[in-house]
Length: 276
Image (cartoon, rainbow, N blue to C red; front, side, top):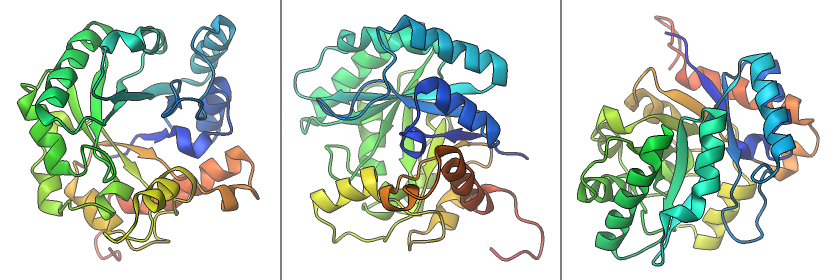
């Protein structure tokens, strides 16, 4: 069974949306992920919303290459939440035929967070995208159990999802049993990278690693192989490796190729007798 790969935003953060599509096509990716909404006010993003010419160029790149858009970033659910804040993101996702929007949970009131997540899923449903809740150890959804609990409290909407990121698996109280307990219908894609595993990192250290200093699969101590063995064998893999120091010596296309090559051995079917 051949895998489908997506070039995550963080791997191609130096690219505009149409550039990311073309880099993905040149290096064997079937999809891209785009960050069209910043993860914090003033934080980096790819400029497309409200820029019709960029949307047209991106759509043209998709038509030319056959590369799709898998996920868009990012919606954060805080204490004050209005799902219509992101209407422009939903519209762009529909135009790009995106499959998912990445969601982060920042509200420590779980009942309210679950209710707002349910509202988000309802608003997103007509746009044909899933709302994939990513657990991150410094957020109000710190592990896989929390993500599943919130989605269950929300009534398991039809377009609900849980996003598993290898980095957050390796730095949270998430076990392989917790991963296997996630219902298959909630898994749409998973993110691969590596880092030093452990529970001893400060919030600042975790955020820095996530946004600036991930490692290629195999260069850290996260149980990457075990994680992807526990996930469905047909899951799309989002290659999410950002490392400012290493990237400085590689063009975006070269970095995308290196990251994909390092990821393949952990998620492609292994031949009988091959080392695991």
